[in-house]
Image 1 (cartoon, rainbow over the protein chains, first blue to last red):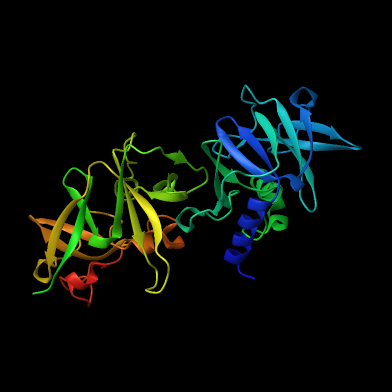
Image 2 (cartoon, rainbow over the protein chains, first blue to last red):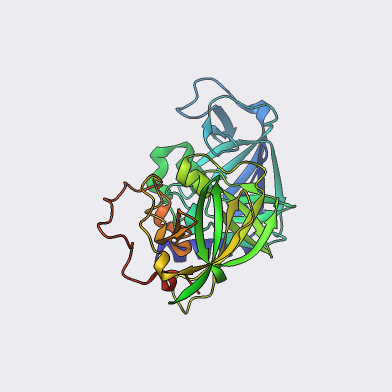
Amino acid sequence: MSTATQTTQSATAAQSARVAALKLDALNVLIPQQDVRTLESSIDIDAASPVRGAIGWIAYRQDRLPVYCLSQQLEPMTTIPSGRRVVVVLQTSTRAYGLLCSEVTLLDKLASSVQELPDAMALPGSPIYALAMHEGALACVSSAARILAKVDPTAKNNATNGAQR
Amino acid sequence: MKQAGAWLLTIAPGRMVAIGERELNHLIHEPTIYAVPQTPRHCARVIEWEGQILPVWDLASWLFDAPAADPIAVMAVVGFQRTRRERPQFGALALPTPPVRVLVRDDQACPLPQDLAGVQALAISCFKNQDQAVPIIDLALMFSSALVGGRPAPRPAAPTPNTGARKLAASLPS
């Protein structure tokens, strides 16, 4: 199956699936709700000895998971911007991790259509694979696997660029 | 002598490119623009138009490494086809001023301007308009994934004055 076909199917899936709307400062990011395990408060972050690229750890069940922070340009950050209060725990097929957000809203359905990211904008390795209008603003559609590949490049092999949601 | 209609698009003072007469669909003045992170600098924004999210190509950024000034004065919604039978695709071009319509004849063909780095990758031919070389740009190529990586290395200058085997007027998409 071609990457383009898989991306089209992913955009269609994002349209019909329940999504989580993550706010990273002014940027809206939509993620399938099936990628979300739980929400935690940023107060619970343990900032001691984070792994490379992370800002700390958060306890989830019996584990300690790395917590990452992305700017509104979707670049990894190691300092925490003010206003980031929620850690969303995301799960790929192989790993769980935390992402520090300003707000997280769970939606039953997207009010507008999801469109594939235009060909002219699709940089290799981009965490974004589709776009949608959400509450009068643009939202970038991504997934736990694609975000993990951005914050932890060693996880790229598991994220298989372009093929995963 | 064959002639065809074209739209002159001003990119910067004294710098123009052209598209085919029927490639221009709509003009939007001071549109609402949304930035998309992790995208090429020349195509890093989108607009919403008739229920679609359209990529915005910034020619000033591509040609001069100087992004179009905010707010963008005019957004030209353009339509193009990669193949004749394909459903038209749409995109947008950020412009400082509204396009101007001209008629182009075959005998206006001229070489591409050599002082405009990056234009070779976009142009399908070029014509002289009031002593200025005006490249005709290939919208289907621009809005494909071919230029995502940025400007390719410059090619050697063409040895002949015309930039393609086709006649100039025929190179303007109709």
